[in-house]
Length: 375
Ligand SMILES: Cc1ncc(COP(=O)(O)O)c(C=O)c1O
Image: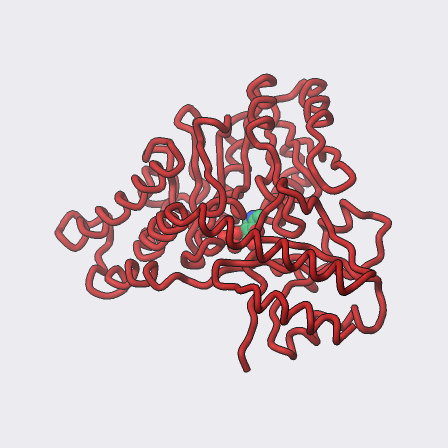
């Protein structure tokens, strides 16, 4: 059976050229980058090449780029360091962050390490910047603001340049989870007043288990994983050279083809939205479906009934892979914390479609046809 994969916000397929770039570091060039002999040096050179390339793409310095094991580790490192090392006693975040952030800030608050405030959301799930400024202006403790660049479930984009400016005005530390935007949108760290930024390679056709953390050079963060001197003492543990090479190459490829992929994937999302609205009068859409949103994500909603409650399972049976809410947490807590936070009174079935360059308009039509026939 030919399957259709519409769950690219959960993870994407590894690019062939990325795999090819990684292969030598899984085979012949197996050296430990800390070794001083030639095997070690070739591994070291590959890591530093990836770091330099990522730094160039983000318009920043290689010394501010740290490779990690995933987006979750990057966010944990940033948030815990802001509280432990940078004196933040008040975290301002939102109720719709990914659990990598949300559970970390909740844990710190539960340990009395800091106070936690959630910024208000607008009717369609955007961060209310007026409320953010209010929270910052009345806080007498040093603040960490941790807000995601784009929401992985409803796709909303946050104006992180404005958030950064507010943080600067109130001398707050700013971390942004850019896991859904790196590789899909241009990121210029000279324009964002961020102290920390988290990214993850598997969201843009790189390998799983390969993350990046940007730490601004003036930020005196301390390591989250202690041991050896890897990553300039910021992250102990022998480097996963192949995955770092994979991160670098995937980011280069994504950046090179960004304009063409953006235009192409946006047409898939626009057509999906149009066809669903045309053929299913009861459909609704979560979040902001305008340009203030990920072109890769469309979150639809259906009234609850026997058919819609079984929709994701029946689509799976038909070979169509989508996500009900977030794949990272599906099923675990009885529905999505994001949908609950933005639409507390709603009782509908959310379905997330997320697209990549590998999808086609024909697949969009097939999926809408299948949903129509099931419902
Ligand atoms: C917005 C967001 N943040 C963080 C993560 C976690 O990234 P990783 O899977 O690399 O730990 C994800 C992955 O689902 C995500 O979508």
